Image (tube, rainbow, N blue to C red; front, top):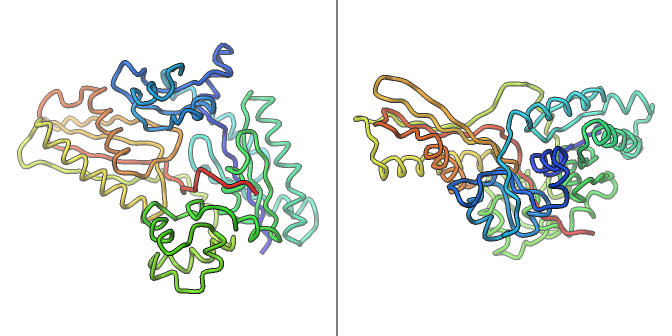
Length: 361
């Protein structure tokens, strides 16, 4: 079946909006988040700051230590959401089916559009024919919104995602079907969708370091990756039949606990949050997902219920990161001002997680 998939990923989105709106920040290591003198976290970092090791969900004090000349800017989430809406309106003009994964990321299925325009049926012909459309989409976003995007073009979601990560920022990468196996071979196994830290370690221990090693492995991968083994083998050869998820229902994972007696005991609350973060992290990893938004929920003895959330630019999966953001929200919003009847932790803005580092061909 002919498929033409784009993966569009805005480059350092939050920081790029800040640099566009304030020319004095251009070329500077911009860190979107609380300043290092306050208890807070990093929501996003410009590429200039990322060179120093700054990343999303990192404590601001750590970011300040890694990047002493970093320029800290408080996040403007309403502005970022409005910018996202305008960008997605431009994307919609392509006529593609769209799966918006997060505020700054989307898959586009242009199979019908490209097929009608070219009259071709060969997969690689269609993919090459789609490149000018990707280039025009990038140009329109830059001209109309003053921001750069990276786009990956391929025949499925797995490859399109890898392609968009391949040459950031402002990249445009095509992975033809005829070249996909060779393209994947030198990459570390962690770039494959669904390979988390534990699976990567298990593969590394038997000498599987690259996707090429996965392709060549003669054994049954189920011994290493469980039921994911057969799919992992297909992914290693660039085969992926997952459709775009076109529903607009917000996806989330959450965990709550109602106490027998209302409490504001900090050790009890921290222990509860840690357990909830561990549970959520495990569910994310089983689904091979990452989350960009963390939410806390509290309920008091009079049944008053409050929720607060924070959104970061890079998806997170680790329990410690989820726990840290939850604690930050509780402290920042002073939610434990009286004993709690219930405390909850949740994540949303879910999307697949792919490796962040790629080996260039």
